[in-house]
Length: 210
Image 1 (cartoon, rainbow, N blue to C red):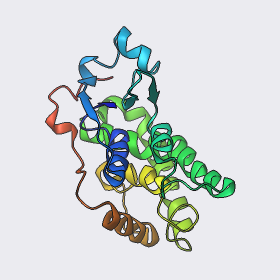
Image 2: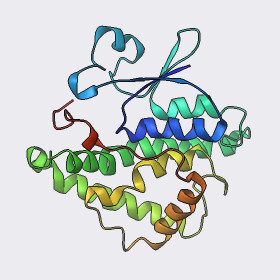
Image 3: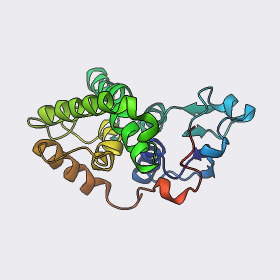
Image 4: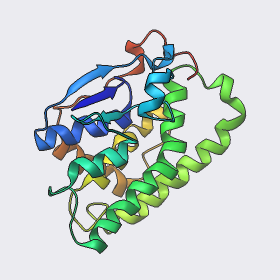
C-alpha cells in the first residue's frame, strides 16, 4: 500500500497512527500541497477533492478521506466493532469530527500556525464561537464517558483526538474543559509518541493558500 501524505496534516496523522497500532507497513509519497502537488490531473484521479491523505491499495484502487481510510484499515480489529449499533456509534463520532471539528478547530489551527488569521479576519469570530461550542459538547459528553464510542478506545477517539488535543494551537482556551482534558490525557497515553505530530513550520510554502 501507499499513503499519499503531507507531514503537517493531522488528517494524515490519523492514518499513520492507526497503521502504527496495527503494525501495517506502507510506502509514503510526500506531497507539497501548498505548491499544488495534490491538484494535478493525476492526483484528482485518486481524490476528486485534491486533498491528502489518500491510501492507494496494492491493486491501484484508492481511498480518500481520512475517516474512510480509518474505517477500511480498522476492519476486523479491536478499533472497529462488529456489532451494528456499536459500529454506528463509531461512525457517529467520525461524522462529528468531519462536520464540526475540522471546520472549526482544525481550520483555526491551520490559519494560526501559517499566518493566515489576518486574511481570514472576517471569519474568525464565527469559527471561534463554533470551536468553543465543539469543545463544550465534547466536555459535557466526556464527563460521563471514558471514550467516545461504546466505552472503549476506537478509531472514533483517534479521529477526534487528532485536532482536538492541539486546540490550544488555535488559540482556544482549554482550561475550562476538565473532562475533555482528562480524555486528551487518556488518549495521549494510549497513543504514545510513536507517531509524532509534525508542523507546518517545516514547509516553507505553507503560508500559501491551497
